[in-house]
Amino acid sequence: MEVTLLGAGDTTGTPTVGCDCETCRRAREPDDRLREQLRERGVDVGTRGVERTRFSVHVRNDRTGETLLIDASPDFRTQFLRHGFEAPDAALITHVHFDHLDGLGNVYRLTRDLPVYASGKTDPATGQSVAESIRERYDYLDVIDVRPRDPFESVRVCGLDFMLVPVDHPPLDCYGVVIEDPQTGGTLALTGDTSYRVPPESKDAFADADLLLADGILPADRCDSHPAGGSHHDTDGVPMTYGSKHMTIEGARSLADELDATELRIVHLSHYLPAETAFDAPRAVDGERFTL
Image (cartoon, rainbow, N blue to C red; front, side, top):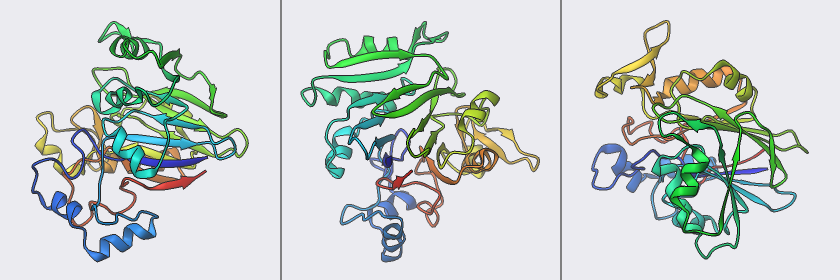
């Protein structure tokens, strides 16, 4: 299967509208060294600069040509046009925050039928499941066919096997995803938006992936900018979680080591990064592509 990172950014993306921080300036006007580094990772930024649009992942079954969209970014149209992708054959939504969901409205008149998979487990915070929330929000779109699934239930879609994996993103229910190619055994694990407090059963499901896409919003030394500070400290006192909802970059690296992932890309990145390392691997950028 072929995995394309459509959007590797957080809620505001990078560069952020109206921001003139050093990281956003470097994104808008990358120097030759950064351009070459990205070309070595298979990303040619052309004249547009470096981007991290809102989060979304495109998965293609290279045997059947079918495609699965993981989370529907508000930047859906730009992302799909940039890569020359057609409307997906199915979608999977991890949770109902707008930067992972609101792109679904873009499928209007692009396809006749879009199965949308999401958790059918009722969220105590909302009184609805993720699937029910999606169905209610997009009840005006007949093309969206919401299909609830249970956590850890294996489902075959587009010739690939996926499961929703519970994570920790208070106050809402949120899920990571594991996708396996039944022919090649290639495995993608995606943590979804989460703190470092991933349940043990979920860690077991995420383990040994060929590619891990892990939520990591900013470095641990920026936790003092959050009203809640940092949490889930390691033995050296380094916070693995920024506030209570997202891992730090250090947390994402630590989790990848624990899960023994073959390759790591840190996603859902903010623009609050040291400019000189903001676009270095394993920090993801839009357009990176992997074959598993």
